[in-house]
Length: 183
Image (cartoon, rainbow, N blue to C red; front, top):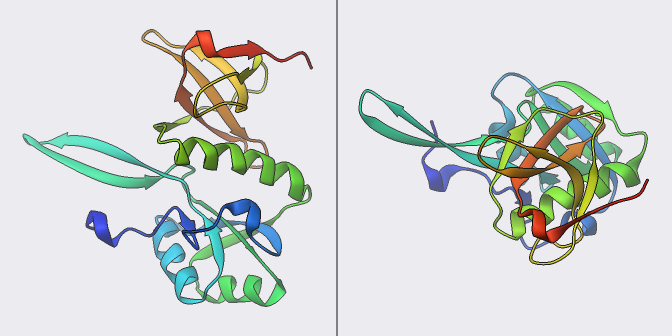
């Protein structure tokens, strides 16, 4: 387990937004538990990536441990040219590269996750929902985020979907700040 300061950044280069990355987007389906190691390799190769992560707290034998885990287990998103794609494959940490057919749609999905991270929202993995009520946040730091609203026993959550992966993450949301989107 890595110490907190040994974890890679969520976005590389850190000072940029993912909308500023140049090249084509690719999805690296990593070998088991290789997401952060691949991120470190990409930093050394100066390849732009997005690896959303969240803290997980566990209690074992009376001890509390915190681990930073990928939000979308087994996946890392990177942006680059053909030479950089080959460099990613050479790391020997990738099981499969997924070609992104709809670059704009993936970027739109990822930008919503990036906005939630930059707003300091706590994202947690969530099961992917194929059907449901689409809503948009109207005010606050999460304004303009769009997703599907779900209710749990304790809260209301906005599910942000990465359609290409069939995965999603959710953030707690107040129902007073959302409106239904007519699609």
